[in-house]
Length: 81
Image 1 (cartoon, helix red, strand yellow):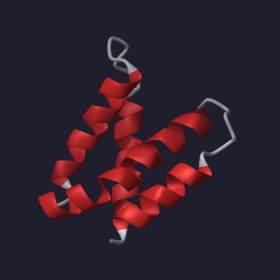
Image 2: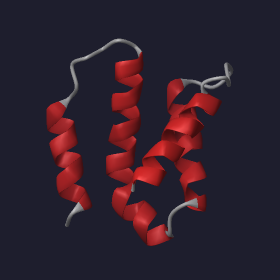
Image 3: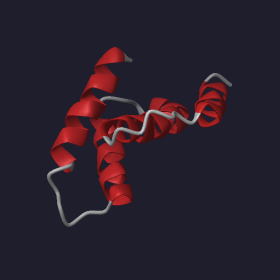
């Protein structure tokens, strides 16, 4: 999982340079790139977690240090059903 999270961060750095895309489009590009690293089953299972992870990294990069803990809890619960 560590490799996947590192890949997410690297892809985020790349899509950040795409100035014509909005935040949601950039996020979708990052999520789509994960198909190279994960099976369809894994991607379906971990999408909520990875989506929240991207949001948290973006918030922290903007200097917003108030992480949405409830969103993270929901995400982790859905990943381990």
